Image 1: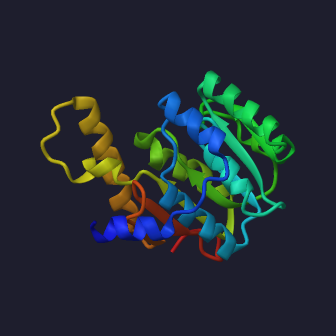
Image 2: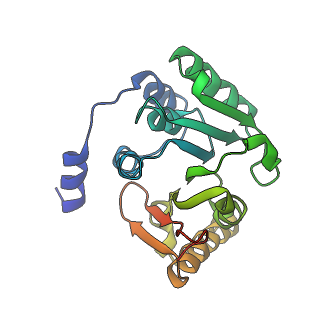
Length: 213
């Protein structure tokens, strides 16, 4: 056992949505790693997050866990795949949480911002097409309140960000985009932390002046 596995085991928590986990595993739906999910929820508690914008619903697994942090949490979530969007809505209904979710079907690069509602968000959670992290960040960061959080999942691409011998042009391009976004944040004045949990989490705090530092 290496130290990362040791820490993962210490962070392990009982699954509170086993039906969703089983569905994801049976249908090969990528979902957030448990240790990264625990860190996300911990940051939500520390920051008192109540209003969340999620880019990339998939089947609603992360959204459900974010809703579980506090009964006052609500989530606006965007998904472009119609089948995933429909499945997520079924889960929201089955668990009695549909009233706390605004589930939108559409491309997050294009969906009208007016559809998201007028309130600023406490948290922007980006977990969609990895090559578009920068586009999503630049489009939605202005909607986050000063002092709010931006959290991005899968910033390590299962190790591909450090891999040089990538033969697939598409995979290499995605790696370059993810690595480029990571380095842009690291080299900016953003208040940020790159965390080696799950497939990598990037946590950014929007400063009190309304930008990042």
